[in-house]
Image (tube, rainbow, N blue to C red):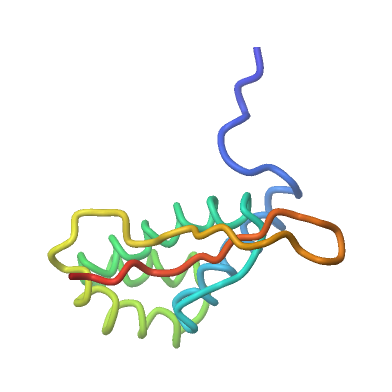
Length: 118
């Protein structure tokens, strides 16, 4: 019985957290990130959590977001722009679009973006 199979598992735990945090930071700052499919799916989960914290907007939520992102500029952008942008949306703030395989090693690539709010 293998219990620890949920989510992406490629690196050690601390390294994996930093990879995901850096992907989410890049997504918040640039609006899109190109990476492998597995990393994009995992980062999507955490990006949705960060937007949910931004929608709450209180000081505790801001501190929780900063403890994950470790970047004041990203947290400010998250709470001032994205929290207000997705105020009326209940979930599903990100989208994973498949891209052609990477030329060097043929890895499955994906683009992680925010969903446009209509």
